[in-house]
Length: 398
Image 1 (cartoon, one colour):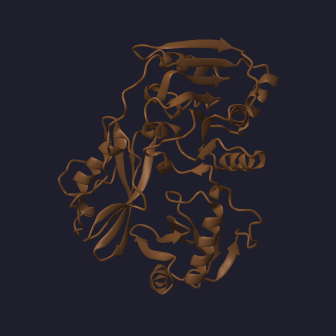
Image 2 (tube, rainbow, N blue to C red; image 1 turned 90 degrees about the vertical axis):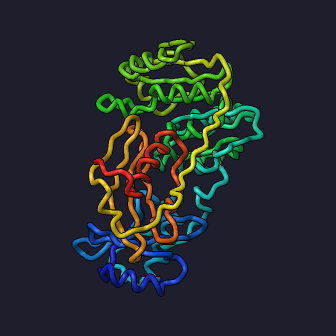
Image 3 (cartoon, helix red, strand yellow; image 1 turned 135 degrees about the vertical axis):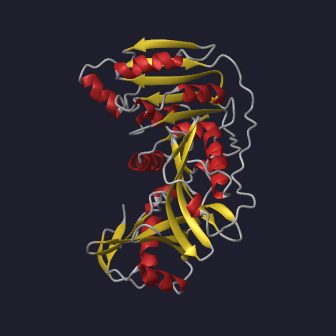
């Protein structure tokens, strides 16, 4: 990831120079526990933090992993502009100075943010979702052969997402959206009865950490909700352990219908499948069919902090250890000061298998998530309400 190493000017000097440094730096949040500061950046309609961190041979100006933009060009430009605004002496840089010959891939019309799917509607006659598309061979093949269907590809591996966007551009396809996000959270915000297919091909087995598997009871329930009648969830794996585990999970719904195939050939072979076939490994298919329509999802989540405002004793009341509840958790991880009456807290919270990490900005005027609210899910909502109680000083048990 892009970063620069600079001569250290000290955190106080960073704050003073930022006040005179132009429009790109909105405010500076100073860590209470570490020699570092967060710089709130607004650049090309993106809102995120850069991290100024003291190191052995100076200081680093780099991305903040919680809020970093996917567009690397935007990130590189913001680091350069921020360094100029702070008048930093650059010692070492991995940022290329030459201009991009082509438009940034993540500025593509086919790259979508999670927020784009809130109240999602489409003109396509059908919708399919592929979870973890990897090299993209399967989703490209399906999109090319089914132009009437919209394919939504979910991938948390950024280089794979970038590669698929490049292929969409090269092949001139108009029916693929690329989303760099966790599939388990993504399904929760989709409308009911919208998908014809959900593909999960060769997911990471996670034999030693089964809680990290994509397939699980919640995932199955959400899949059945978003699938239309006669829609199908298709799992394809080379792992016998994953197959046996998935067989149990697929059997959990009170009413279900699924089929099992072994060493069934598909018209397109993924990079991983080609590797397994050379090794003469068995390939297992489990396909779960949706037999009935689901009710429309009516849950509306509000992540407002209402009348919560800053007071000087707030941080003293917050637990230092993660708080585990039934179905969710929350953890106040790090604290930063912005002004005498304003501070920032980094939190991890939500579902154990798919946690969110966000910042909460608290001042005398307002309290809000910064720069964006969490995704609407039941676990996130429960965690939000619990955190709000602690911040209000209404909960004292740790």
